Image (cartoon, rainbow, N blue to C red; front, side):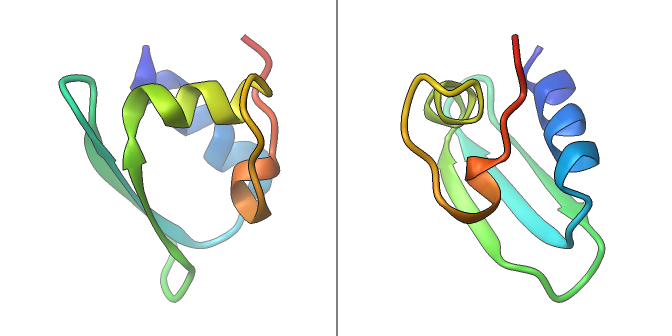
Length: 65
């Protein structure tokens, strides 16, 4: 499920970045080159991009689920 949320999020913002999610549901993804590096807990990432926690920059791009 987390990988699906990451793919939807990346498609929505369309910017280069690397994402490292920690915890049992975590993983690493790279989208393009030269963008910001984001590292956080996988559950917190999902809470943030769903709008349940505040997010800035690319993390402010919402994925409704």
